[in-house]
Image 1 (cartoon, rainbow, N blue to C red):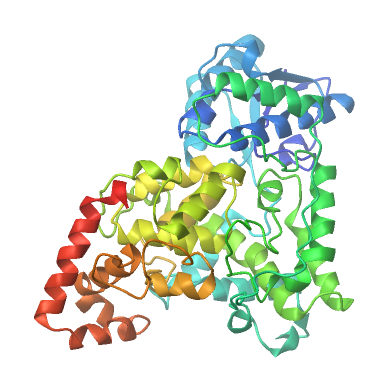
Image 2 (tube, rainbow, N blue to C red; image 1 turned 120 degrees about the horizontal axis):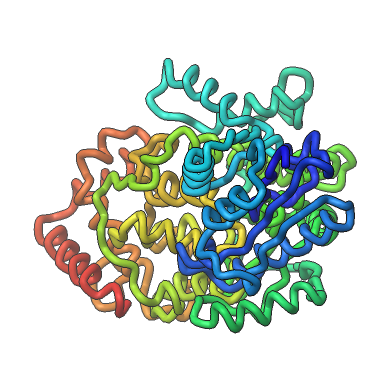
Length: 514
């Protein structure tokens, strides 16, 4: 054997660079399902199902095209983890080299290096050409940007990517004259709620997916999450169908309401394409091109198109670069030294706080929540409640179908929790319950009142928000982005501060019962 080609579970594309120059007479592919990948965090059953079904469909595609492949299905072996599978293949075949595309997880990368070293086999880790900015390119950008700035900013990276790829550009200027339309894209839904929503296309499970359903129900019966609502694309064809649906039915309304939330309405106008992108069933270039064409043809307004493209060309590429720039330290970052355990209701959704009950119950039902539900409800509470960043991050990695560590960890630890001290964010994302009341109808019928910061009906988010401001008053006052947040604290009497602090401490001691 010349090359043992390893294809990981989130590298499901024939454009995988490890397949370039593949010779079926000399090279061999290995793919493997192992329990450890579902158990190192307590993975949602829909997340397990998505990965296994998509992997099996891709294996079927490889075999149909006559690629020699050894596929370890979960029921066919008792190897505990991926390194054990790789060691077996190396011992059996003694290849001249190992080829693999850059993994999306520092842990897996370390394991690859260790196994290759143990067997004295050259390891070729190939640049992941799925992404539009390589790891080395991002590091060079970060070094240059860091010469004049103390922290990285996605906005300036994003503008450079727009120019580099000539996306939404009019010569050297941005289309429409502005680089982003955030100021237009933060509208609440109003009392009438979402109107004229078109349901996302469902994908009838085929024999492969049904077999995975049965496996997951039997093997991972104690794992969180429900399977009944599973509707994620597991093939490239299904992913393209979902992309077309989003461009034609949802993109025009996506922009203004991308931050809005509504009870029992999980998807709104969001694309639901993240899992397909992160498994490499879709290429970001084709997704961006489809959105840009919708603007050019007059099918969707610039604000919606720019907001969507920024998520992919800007934020997605940026956080991947940050992940590889900051690892392994990002994994243990804890700027505020928060250490509280996750309340048990993070795994059930059974809390009296309506906003968190809605977002977590939806997550357990579907394996999905959109970016504001993750950042400004679950992430917000986690910061204010002083939860351990590592426990919160592991929870996010476990419960969302689109979670791969390169995208999950910087989003959670860096952005949602500010646990890396603002390496790429200018301020912690904290707010009172009033923000959630403004952007959703979650507060309707809730036990707590977002306008009250003390008293029996005081919203825990509001109480903990003001306690956070008091605790970090001097630090927040020194930051131009947060200076206004703490101005009102100066007007508080000593009695008001004491009452607020006392209630906040009670809330923190009673997290499991909120």
